[in-house]
Image 1 (tube, one colour):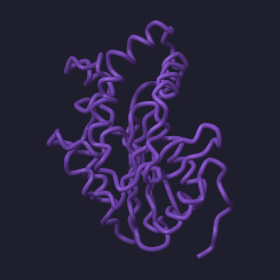
Image 2 (cartoon, helix red, strand yellow; image 1 turned 135 degrees about the vertical axis):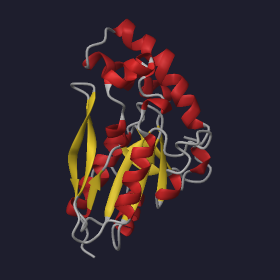
Image 3 (tube, helix red, strand yellow; image 1 turned 180 degrees about the vertical axis):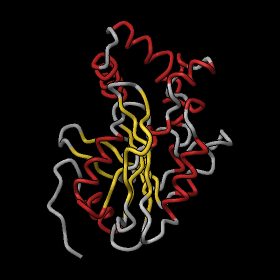
Image 4 (cartoon, one colour; image 1 turned 90 degrees about the vertical axis):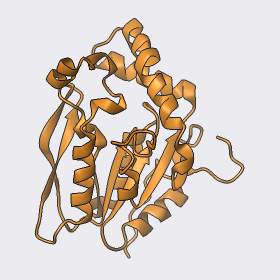
Length: 228
């Protein structure tokens, strides 16, 4: 198997494991963690490391549209577990596990600049051996809608970063997309942090634990006895 060039954001342990996962038939890798933990960054680094042997398929494409959130009265909780088309996401994962050799599967993507999902934005080809899907609720066991998701994934990695850094990232993200600092902090306390606490309950169910080494600027697997 050809080795890819090292990716600066990935530790050698993660690089070796993702090379292994992409070395055979179709596998699905889930990246889970609280809002602001860096899931999209990690997923992007994994795909960059593997080139055409991997593709990202984000859970966020299954956000309900703003008009539907308004109809349901959930616009103030966007990002909570019941603001996604969970059944649609699980159905996509099943299709990807069973994708035929001549089938192209299309997945939705989420565009933050318009705060809406866009259908059919990601074309997934059958020759791609590793698909990386990232999202908040891949391990959620206390919700019947989300409970089947983990069994559809070959591995799930739980990503954790320093809580202060995570909240800083969230604040910067919300402000970048139009909220004032006060609005951003209010949203974090009312929506992001309750979701984060619920996600953290199920961290122990992950196949592997990933941490962000701030000093080295890279993702690595948490080693036994390493609490951070």
